[in-house]
Image: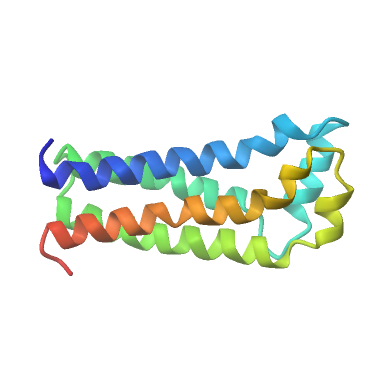
Length: 139
């Protein structure tokens, strides 16, 4: 695979993992998953679903840039910016959501680690975008 196409592909996979990770609580919560998950996502300063929206926009930017439908240099810069904002949004959510909300949900114990796993997965997007920018000679 061409070197300049691997980094955006990793970024696209990272965006998909973020979207998947944000959907996991809807599958794990046993009792009224919509209500409990809405409380879980809404109990913080910022809703992480906004980060999911940023991830979906980043997929479009990464795909357009890697297929050269958009200038790859411009797409790499935009994807890097979107990735940084994505990590900030998800990290602020992870830090500010009350632990009591997480513990009180009727879900497996693994849900306690969900917010940190989501933050870790979100970090893939700016790392891959930075790698792509470096490959293109921007950084």
